[in-house]
Length: 179
Ligand SMILES: CCCCCCCC(=O)SCCNC(=O)CCNC(=O)[C@H](O)C(C)(C)COP(=O)(O)OP(=O)(O)OC[C@H]1O[C@@H](n2cnc3c(N)ncnc32)[C@H](O)[C@@H]1OP(=O)(O)O
Image 1 (cartoon, helix red, strand yellow):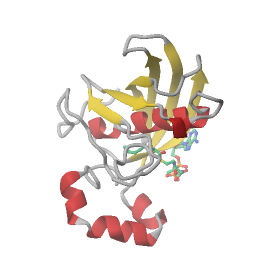
Image 2 (cartoon, protein in one colour):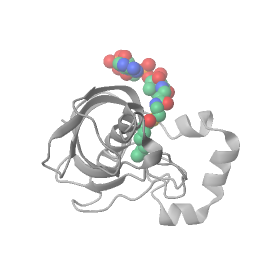
Image 3 (tube, protein in one colour):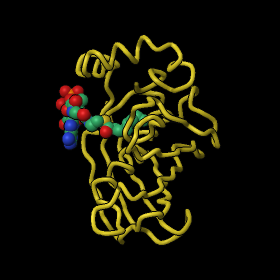
């Protein structure tokens, strides 16, 4: 197990959005998930995602891919506890029970191990409360990358816009760990 980074936000700290256009957590994204995550004890994060009508797959039910995206985002916030940029290399999900529209999915994510650049993590999503019935389980492998991963591969105008926006640095966690 890796240590909790010295610079990691203290337990109870609301992590906020790292990028306002992020589909997972960005407040400016019109159809995004607006995931709200809070640093937990050790290498854990608690997050909430409210399923809205535009997240439907079947009538009145969350789309499985949307739920997977919420798990991906929650697992990604663990990067702040390790204080290292990392991207999803592999993500496996088990859908245990359907999640209706208007439901809050309570996600608890944790780091389970590290080997070289590989960060292993897992998460559970529950409905009806943080200790409610299990709806989705996920296991992930994140791979540590350098910040150049983003600046090399991202669409240039978006990278430039993000890097030129000093305000983004101040109000968001952009480039503190992951852009
Ligand atoms: C809060 C922050 C927001 C985060 C939330 C959202 C997170 C995301 O969705 S990120 C976006 C989706 N992910 C991506 O776009 C990543 C795309 N993939 C890549 O860029 C590359 O494949 C990348 C960086 C993951 C790995 O490439 P590279 O740096 O060349 O690593 P590479 O040397 O091949 O592999 C490193 C190790 O990881 C292992 N590995 C890499 N990919 C995988 C995989 N898919 N499955 C299993 N093992 C893998 C390799 O076997 C190797 O292991 P070892 O060190 O034991 O030999």
